[in-house]
Amino acid sequence: MKKLSVVGNWKMNLTLEEARNLAIRLSNEAVNLEDKVDVGVCPPFVFLKDVCDILKDSKICVGAQNMNAERSGAYTGEISGAMIKEIGCSLVILGHSERRTIFHESNSLVNAKLHTALTYDFNTILCVGESLEERETERTEEVVGIQLSESLKGVTKGQVRKLIIAYEPVWAIGTGKTASPEQANCVHSFIRNILKNQFGEAAQGVRIQYGGSVNSKNAKELLSQPEIDGALVGGASLDFESFFSIISDALKIEKSS
Ligand code: 13P
Image 1 (cartoon, rainbow, N blue to C red):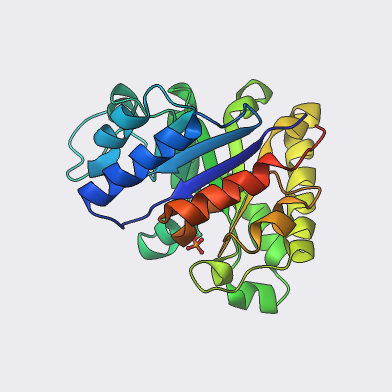
Image 2 (cartoon, rainbow, N blue to C red):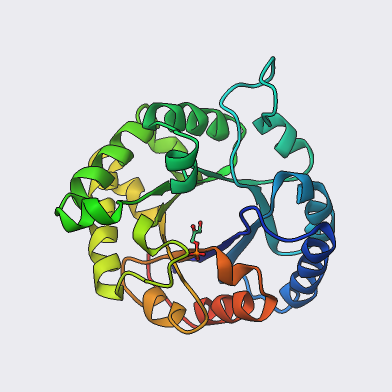
């Protein structure tokens, strides 16, 4: 059976107290989680240590929303993989569209970060996705194909077990507009084929999450699609009830690998 993966990306939200309270509620409920779904949360950097400590002995893993490609040095304002590893993170999100568009991260920078993340043995979520204009001009496959091939350059078959791809159409992020389950599944199949070309059979084990306005109402249908192996949840992961409802939906879905 393939384990689904549901990860909350808290982005730049919550106060420390809210973050701690959310983590405590998740920790209490996680006791009842079967080992069927991998669950993670990615708080802002300054809350990571508190959240890691709260979730340390739970089934929920904690990750960062970004990291620097370098190991250490004169990079004012940046955070290294070693730092987030040391405080207990096992997960990192790379190449989120907000990093790509607002902070001008290129595929080659994402590729450098990815290699560093894999050397630290992080479960690494690589985000890809097209803008509205790219979808409307039927360039989705071209754009996602380039993002994947350039961001995954040099990654070996042996490393893919640590890799998760998140397909996040930019037009669906924070807009309330979700890709239809069929639209998402179609791009996920395309992504799977690209992964197969690069990694052969090992590609079958890579989870492909969908992200973009996932909530407690649409999660079940999205997660039921054959090629959707999880969700990267933004806004709905800030509220315990809605995030846990998405996790509960994932728990009910059986997928063969
Ligand atoms: P929303 O779920 O708020 O649309 O955000 C999706 C996302 O960007 C997760 O990384």
